[in-house]
Image (cartoon, rainbow over all chains, first blue to last red; front, top):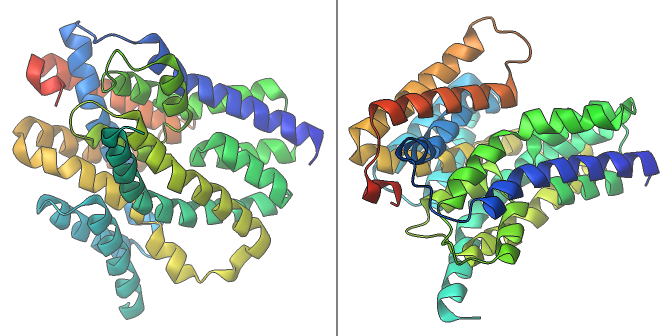
Length: 101
Length: 239
């Protein structure tokens, strides 16, 4: 292992860890400010939605199979299938779609 | 271990399995890229074990190859991974205030997009052992996938990698859609977020407005807008 690479990895890990851990360690009480509370309530839904679309459409070998995977996942999630069911059936749908395409 | 902790730990392992599968696919691709940037399998594996961040690690590969200044590497990680700061702020409200610093420091090690997602979906307050269960299956997969990517290169068929790469997005959908089904406001927030995300990729944007920055800007703007227009009541925010 080259020492300059190890240094780079340690710096990356340090910065990333601080970003992740500081809010958990510093915010130890329920936030009472209604606006900030509401903001934090919406954060997960917005972040996860933004990360999913359009990325899922381009993650696969063709946008068509990606779209099929997306639609299958949304339908299953709407029917309240579990995490692992949604994830694995979406994978299978993409695999099958690419076999046919 | 207390019974409730054991149960949470087992549930974390179960929910961690789809994450681990998705990680295997993504980290395999990361490993191939690492090899192309001249990293040894040890270097790439240590990087993945210590960082657990796909976008951050991909971005660092080029900087490591050209031996970029450490301050530059640090700033890049800060910008790309700043979304974790928002996630951890939200997650801090899922932890009961009597959870110790030690548990908080361990949970904080693996606030990834995916672990954050399932942690937020955990019913009631988050039990740290749930996170540990998910970490136990997902971190080794992330590191091992990276390692195998370096060693094996393109040995895995493209069709398998392609199919597995949807797993993580499938999970995000499974987390976001059920609550959106019950609440028109949430459904609107999800739709607007997806539409805005497509629009931002499609419109010409300055180069800094990509990846991590795009996620941060859209998250702050849309969440703040929703918070102002539809403030949540006391009980909802704890759901």
